Amino acid sequence: MATNLLKGKRGIIFGALNEESIAWKTALMAHEEGAEFVLSNAPIALRMGKIKELGEACNAEVIAADATSVEDLENLFNKASEILGGKIDFVLHSIGMSPNVRKGKTYGDLNYDWFHKTLDISAMSFHKVLQTAEKLDVMNEWGSIVALSYIAAQRSFSHYADMADAKALLESVARGYGARFAAKKVRVNTISQSPTVTTAGQGITGFDDFFNFADQLSPLGNAPSEECAKYILSLFSDYTRYVTMQNLMHDGGFSTCGITEEMMETLAKARQK
Ligand SMILES: NC(=O)c1ccc[n+]([C@@H]2O[C@H](COP(=O)([O-])OP(=O)(O)OC[C@H]3O[C@@H](n4cnc5c(N)ncnc54)[C@H](O)[C@@H]3O)[C@@H](O)[C@H]2O)c1
Image (cartoon, rainbow, N blue to C red):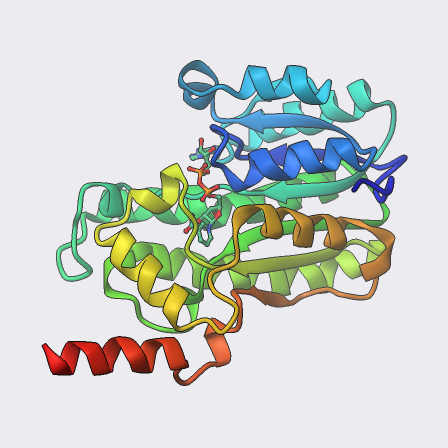
């Protein structure tokens, strides 16, 4: 049930590729909650994906930007504030891609050109978004900028390969830039989300197995993408003004759970076989 939580707020949402995308669900919900925003994705995603449909559903313009290109980002921020008629209140960075993970390269056999790409697309792009926003002075006071992370930044998950390093860097950028942007009363956080069935998620080898494993090891179960969208909106709202420089776990309790009853039962069944 919508409550106009984001009425009067203007934003930019990166990373909606298709209906499964976390950014897609966030955009639909932000629209329901009264926000006005611009959607953005890489030029290739605009050609291949369905973002224009989403734009129509949310009454939002779509502007292409490769998040690794500062020039594209400058163009995006300038155009977005022009279209929306003022400074920006929120930004969602929902961007991630590793050519190594896509091609099934293990952590001991990384292609280093691709490793650069992983870091640039999945982490350095966040710094580029923040730095561009600050230099162009497009953020409103009490604005909020959120990026999406994963617990592989803190713990090793073998199939996540170089994305784990990218997420560690992403979370570090949120702390570093959060401290800097606080001078302008802008907060910067990452949300560490459960495994989620999306194009990016399913690109990981063994995704189904570790999705099920995480689900069993989370007392509340894996957090669905709709719930992640709600959490993101709470961080865009005025109810979280003093939350900054945090990596916030949105994982059904996975990160602090030793073992669940469900997992005990699974292990007992496996032993009996
Ligand atoms: N799916 C999961 O299991 C999971 C779990 C935790 C965190 N995350 C993170 O959530 C975020 C969103 O991913 P998702 O699961 O919704 O998958 P998704 O595939 O729908 O979204 C990833 C997006 O990144 C965009 N992108 C890739 N390269 C880009 C570039 N150069 N410039 C601009 N955009 C680019 C893609 O076009 C796509 O829209 C990512 O940061 C991902 O790592 C996902």
